Length: 577
Image 1 (cartoon, rainbow, N blue to C red):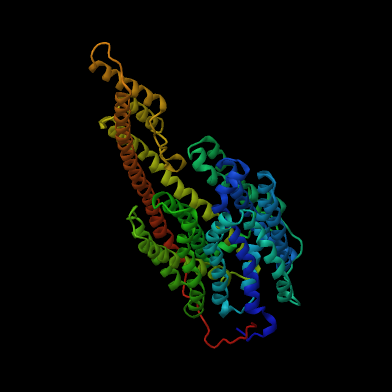
Image 2 (image 1 turned 135 degrees about the vertical axis):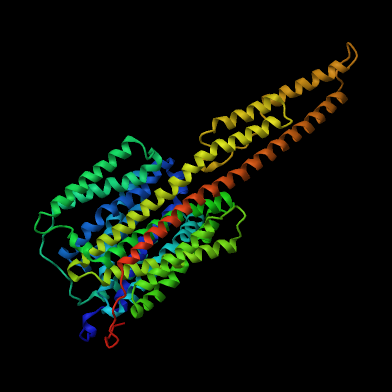
């Protein structure tokens, strides 16, 4: 390779500038989850409607990432990136001022469009900011900044929602972009933007959009509607048909949207597979851990958000280090250790319990963060360094789509497996509760009422978080027990005698004592059921974690697609900083 000059590359200042856009998009994709319950209360909506605040963003990304990668070639990567940043600022402001959930969802769609413009173009611009032998370092910084957004997103979302207002999780983007936009313009000033003639495969865009939309939507709705439902089968069929039509069209048109020859590049394919796996595991873990911390360990949402931070924080530290290592030894060895750390982290997760120490949990999350951090940086570096300039935009779009699809699938897999086992355990915990109430020394009416409440939840005990509604002795039952006690006292009195105030007070004290004993017994049973519920929740999660372990082992076979990258020790270059 020939020596390069400063003018050919934007240098690390371009890497940091472009990574800012990625930071904002990733930050907004994580802070919303924490704020969702508060948003639901403000707009008086249920979870089905609220889920669209997240799904609208995810679906928009899924549909547009590949297409926008192609548009970047036509209109210019720098231009599309800058326009995406501006649209993201506008859409963030609209999200903040949204007077209704409909406006909020529409604004999130606009955010998704901006995100689809920022993610693949930022990846391209980072790759072209430095010479080949510095690619690992550049992508490591890019990945570290993305990891930072994921790391602090839940904490920022929790703090802002609890102490300020949920609308500020969107507002905060606006001043950041206003302040940083002049810096972006300065970084790109005088730089030549890459453009190509307008040759867009409209039919290809249509069919791949339909295929990706229905595939992603089916994944998102699978748990809710049931994976065996006719509607879900219908969505998958539409996606399959649209995908096949897309493949047929792309093989015949002169300027296809997707050049399938890119997948003949085994290293690129291996990177995409590992990237898909990283998204799957990351989002799958992040959907279960908050439930574990809040429901099983009893922490608040804000505390849970801080406890999850080590997972992503370690990724922040690992990413740039691995980037430098790859520049020296290639991709295969780091990728191997990425899978090794990930697999190692799942083994203790299989033994997770309600009594697991926080120090142990932090160690597990650190191991997982190390593994995922290595996989993330290695996969993005492989996919950018091994793909040709001709396929750079397409490769970035496919890469970003793979991670997005992996994340959606990860949530569905982990939630579906967990809920599937919880539905099985539901019958067991209800039967155990009924058995305890039947053996309890309670009035017949109290026992029957408690058992009736449990029977109603026989098939759905863990729905709504598995919270056990506090059972209290009703006023009617209390009055009937009081009446029975008075009748018993009257039977013991001489004929014609009446209940004096002193006897009345004795009856009242006796009833209060008995009622307190009944309530204590009921509370003991309910506490036992809560402990059992936590045990079953963790047990169900461990089944999902086992699936993660199996997937990690299977996806590690993608290592066979990689080879040790050749490096040229004599290569020298100057990178502008």
